[in-house]
Length: 100
Image (cartoon, rainbow, N blue to C red; front, top):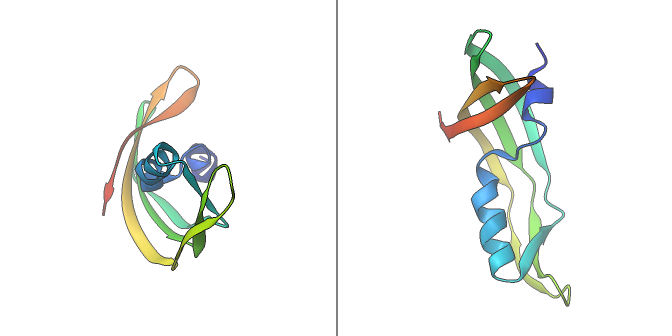
């Protein structure tokens, strides 16, 4: 069971931040999200509950058009998450992410 493959298309709770920045005409540069640990809390053929630990590097927020640096942000330390996935046809779909 390849947990990393299941998590590859998502960036966990960073999605709201990325949407908010785009709406403001900005984007992060230099941001990397490192998944440090993934383990299955429960799993069957149709649903999976994962415990995930990740961290985010330092990064800059820049204006999309000009590239001007708006803000520099510090790294986010290791955070723990509970990720729920549901199997739909031949792929896993994210259904919930919460601090854990």
